[in-house]
Image (cartoon, rainbow, N blue to C red; front, side, top):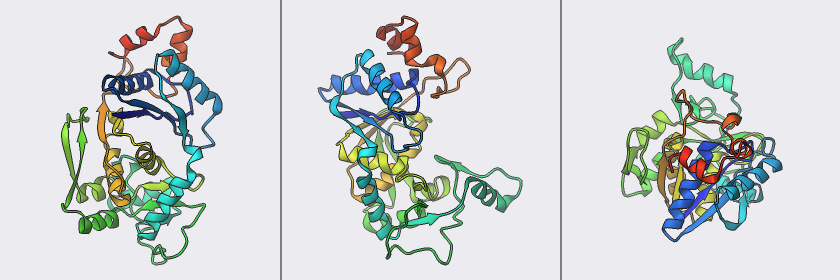
Length: 294
């Protein structure tokens, strides 16, 4: 078993991060496996070295150990560029110049006054740039300095002609938001209707969460992806990318979220629940374990 914890160095770790890291670490150690630390710093504008240093300090204080060296996404941009190039040559990626306001306006246009449909990445993209007559076909070089989207309809159609099944699935050992456990099936229609054309690379930095996390997990040999239920729906995207790029499929363990007294999940802006704050107040690592139910 190989698990990992992959925080972004954009703020302090809070109780939710502690739960996820401790759970992944405990699972790997109980199985005689390995635990990896990955720093997801692909967004160089928001990532700060001081936050990375604090992450490592907090994890060590919690008693978590990890294999060295730590993997940083900023050191592997060539991996993401290669993945994009492969999908581009398959004709499954297209440039998009729409901003958020454009997307919201177009998504709500068919039913004026109605709220647009939302997927794992927010408003489901209405396909404005996908249907442009001058859309590149992938025969030329991949463009830089522009957002790139996955043509989800073409992607699942491509897989339907090469796979033995017309549906998709992943293995879940935790519990999804609706109690999903075991083999979780989903269909091509699910991907086009409830996910849409997700961004694979942004205008201002190479790669995106979906592409980079999929490629990183494969490169590191991660066997079990341990993460929160808020990323359950995104797992379908990662399965599609694994199939398109010929990558191994890990087992997924989505855990419940740590929430505040109002039932809202914790975010990095919740400094009052930051591990550093508890440490400064004299809490012990065992106190943190009890707080998160471990």
